[in-house]
Amino acid sequence: MKKLLLFLMAAAILQAQLRPTQPSPYRDADRKIFAEVEKNNELMANLEYLCDMIGPRLTGSDKLRRANEWTMGRLKDYGLDRPHLEAWTIGSGWLRGTASARIVEPTALPMTIASAGWAAATNGPIRGRVIYVKAERPADLEKYKGQLKGMVVLTTEPARVDPNAPVAPDADQSLRGERGREEVNIPFEERMRLRRQMNDFYKNEGALAVLRESSKEHGLLNMTGSGGTNYQVSAVPSAFIIHEDYARLWRLLEHKLPVEVEIDIKNDVKPGPIEVYNTVAEITGGEKAEEIVIVGAHLDSWDLGAGATDNGTGSSVALEAARAIHALGVKPKRTIRFILFAGEEQGLNGSRAYIKAHPDELDKIQGVVIHDTGTGRVKSFTLEGRYDLREALDKMAEPLREAGLEELSMRRTSGSDHVPFRDAGVPAFFGIQDAAEYRKTHHSQSDTFDKIRKADLEQGAKVVAALAWNLAEYPEKLPRKKVEPAAPSRATQ
Ligand SMILES: [Zn+2]
Image 1 (cartoon, rainbow, N blue to C red):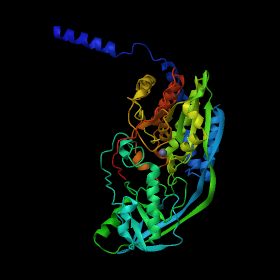
Image 2 (cartoon, helix red, strand yellow):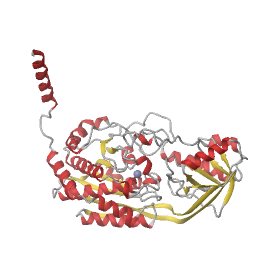
Image 3 (cartoon, rainbow, N blue to C red):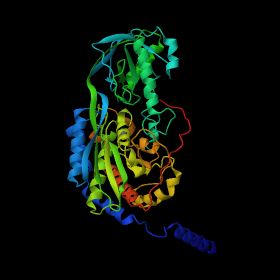
Image 4 (cartoon, helix red, strand yellow):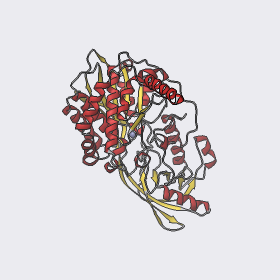
């Protein structure tokens, strides 16, 4: 009995210690934001319009331009200040045409294929033998000199695709080797440069095309660009084929048989330079109006699906955060700016263009909040290695627990628009989300509105809006600091 009493006393003391000594100064405003999102949000209506009435939004396309105009209109309707489009330019536009392919030897079999972005067309059907080129960098290609004329190149072994494998809980972790992964030591520009160099080699050697593994299950295609960061069209035609077809080509090659394929890819190029746009609007701040909090997502998408989870969800969350914060009717201390970037999918180009156009702002940005991993609920935000921000951000994140946010993460992540800001020393925070099939949907033909989870998207809008508000209200300006480059790790893809 005495033991039990002691135990209860100890438990009571512990509980008292765990209870915050005073309520968070942000709690009331954050609760109002949560209630506003819950009652009046327009998340689903906006996202459905973006996916079904506009459609996929390839950078440089008319549809992205329409999406820019439409989102600017929404922000204007919501009463935001200075809704406008900020122009920047790309080297060329690219229009997807039809693509078909089949195996013709040792037997006739159809294949499912899609041209890589900014890849050259084939100019009519081409037919060639399939060869595997094992090369991670240009120096590895020397041994293939004189062997590639008239050949169709496979550049990787088949991916290990197991639809029954347990799904990692975070979209972030299920994407190793792709977007949202922990930082690897080959920066994006360098990877694109290597790919271009290798494509030039294939072209010079007379190869007909490059086929790439989609690495997804159940017939899903994948997509990336091959145009480099200035949107040049690739030297050789380059296309993704579904994993099932890629694995079959590989099995046939293992029999040491001649394997021949026929490919027909039609694409069009819009000669540049072409103007593209970021959509921008803000809620002007009060006493510290010249300091800025940025809420961002990318409006552009790949074009096989509708860009629903990548990144219609983030765009819709940014619009909702704007609507809900403005609906509070209270001026934040700092200006909260909402930016829908273009060109993210080809190398974070919209956020880079923004920074280039506003170098003076870098000292005044309190923080950047990015939502870009699909429809799953936001479990955490990354501090991107900035331990010096931990205490301040813990204070700001504490009231967000009521909306389901868990502990903040120190993780450094790559592959979205927070990276150029972070690398310039600006505090930047990336949402870590539930997987919610993002690994399957993103970049594939399955990235459509029906995948959206309404409750999770609402939760995401609540915590993004509340974090933006708390950053705007925080008494001190957060320090700038360039983080050390991540420890080298092996690139998985
Ligand atoms: Zn994205």
